[in-house]
Length: 315
Figure 1 (cartoon, one colour):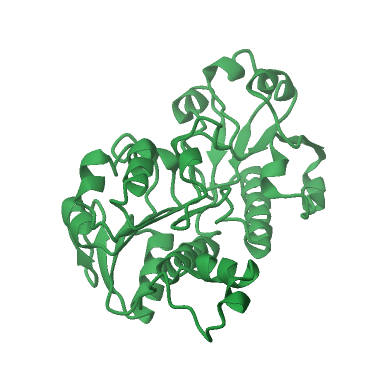
Figure 2 (cartoon, rainbow, N blue to C red):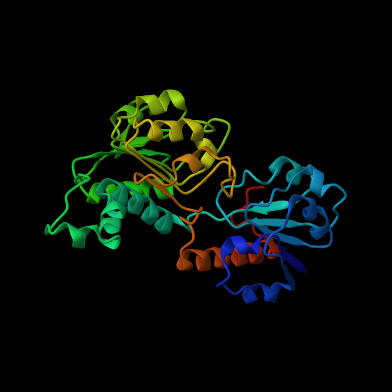
């Protein structure tokens, strides 16, 4: 059996894929351009990929692919209907990145509300030494305890963020399609209006695309902090950038973008240097321990498939 990794660079360069040799030949490509996909999958049995798009066009004429393993929870880059039509099994991985994404989410919120970067720069650039004053208290930082933390999407990551937010003394509001007991569930308008911190953890779908649009951004408090670690297209990125630029939004923490990497003409390019903006390169899922767990899950998915099981099967 032949296994092909199409974009291994998205998993970092510090992990070993030797565990996959138990299944057969392993071919690894750091990255694969769209025009290279068809050729590279022409003679393989199992595809392992993260962001590469698989669709009818690059599957056309393929007679070998039996299993696609997505090294993520989201699967919008794989045409499931086309795969199902061709009898190709598709697996994803769930729950592997909960701790890391929640950690980055909370880190962004704490950094932005405390202005840590600005205070760090004040010391780093010599201003503290030159001031002759024992402390600096500008910009004003605030306690997170007593603030309202709105959570959009209440899967594993949203729940973990909620637990941490409560431990920090926040009131937690949750918006999800199906309300659940034990948490304060509200409609989307309400969570936008009342949140001091709004973090987004929902998958991208037809119903969530552009969910946080200009209308709802206008509902946010001018002091509110928005954090998106889900999918870039869940928000109106141009409207978010404009709200920050015009000081109608208190802070912005972003790890995901509608186009990745963020292109030169992206709306966030104009605000990336502002002190109340924290932009990271889609790394919130990527702690070393998380990525090790991810590869282990992929190996288990392949073993299950070969044994006739349906572990983490989407189709």
